Length: 84
Ligand SMILES: [Zn+2]
Image (tube, rainbow, N blue to C red; front, side, top):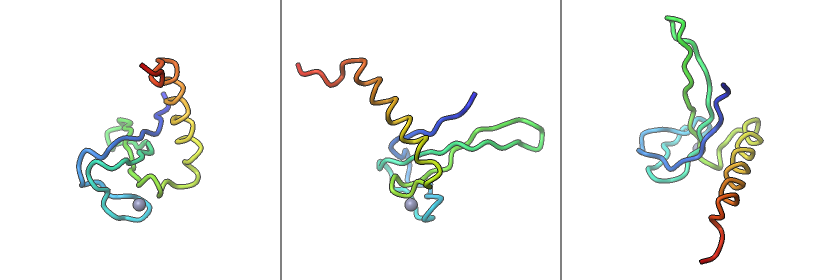
C-alpha cells in the first residue's frame, strides 16, 4: 500500500523541517512526506519527513494537493459546510 502525505498540527516542538532545518513549533501545521526504508533485519518501515507548509519540496506538492483535494471532497460529502 502506498503511504500518502499527511497534514497535521505538530504534536510536539521537537521535529525539524527537512528543508530549512528549523524546528517546527508545537501546534502549527506541518506536512509529512512518507518515505520507506528497510531495516537491517529486512522489515520495511514507513516513516515521515516533516516540513513547514511553506517548505514542502516542489516534487511533493502535487501529492499534497491531491490529499487536500480528497479531504475537501470528503468534507463536502459529509455536508460539513452546510449552514445550520
Ligand atoms: Zn521549513
